[in-house]
View 1 (cartoon, one colour):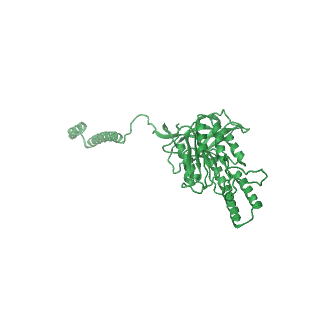
View 2: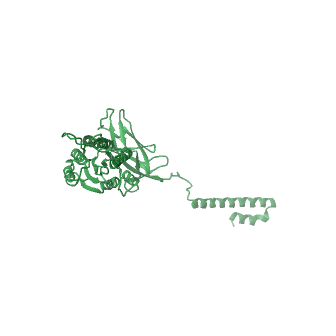
View 3: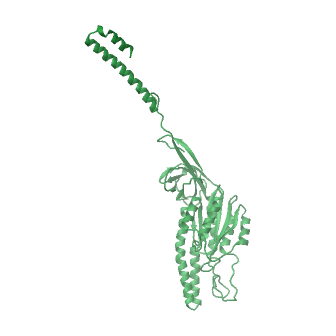
Length: 404
């Protein structure tokens, strides 16, 4: 009981009724006010809120990734640009601008894939032979029993690889794969072009069936062994497959995950020309039989498949930021090696920063645009956000601000 209340009780008999009631009311109000003040302090302590001071905004952690993609740049005349600066390109990821961190030249890790399959004849080995007073006798012609077959001293695919190796720049590294009935690693990683040339001279072989997707899968795995530098796959192929254990979708996904750029020299146009020569020679020099009709049907089906495969090769190269060529002759297939080496030497590595965010889709659409008059650029059309293979760094940012 409060002292004020005790005092009122002692003096109560001396006061009138009205005065006593007023005193009791004043005493009760004072006690209730004190009780409210005490309860409010307890409530504030339990809620964790401070009665005074500035409230700090919560800290949000955003994990960022540095993504590296290939970039080729050309001026208005189609020449390579050697003085490109980071501020002269724009990077859009899913339509949103991303900051460019660096733009530099790096050594290249190059896997060369050579197609040695000959399912409808050895059209890829060399061009039709002419001269000597005899009718045109192509290397693919089936000879009678006992008659020596035509041999090609320098198969086109091997000569193409020779020319490319002689023009690569140190310290570029190269590995070589050939495929036909099976996939073979002819040369493991080396910085010595002469070592690779010797491997081609001693180990190059041709076969019948095609294991194109298996070869592309092996190339992807070889690139994963080389964490530093650019990753390139150079392919001389018709793009057809008949014996692979690996499916196309799986290989394409692995190729994109490895961040590899695909440079393709396609057989489509050159083989079409050789097959048309073969068909013309058969109709002119052979009696039409059921076997020749079957052979003509095989060649026609092959040409139809060849056209479809060329579209896939073109899509693979362009989506990876690479280039595709379809030379019209064997000689021009070999000559393409020079242009290809120039493209490899002119390629930049572009780094930009993105954010890792929860999503069901890890593939992100990518656009690299020129921000300099007369400039044309080519890069990947998408990239895959990875959990462990790319470097990441967390950044603390305040709400409403972005961190890098």
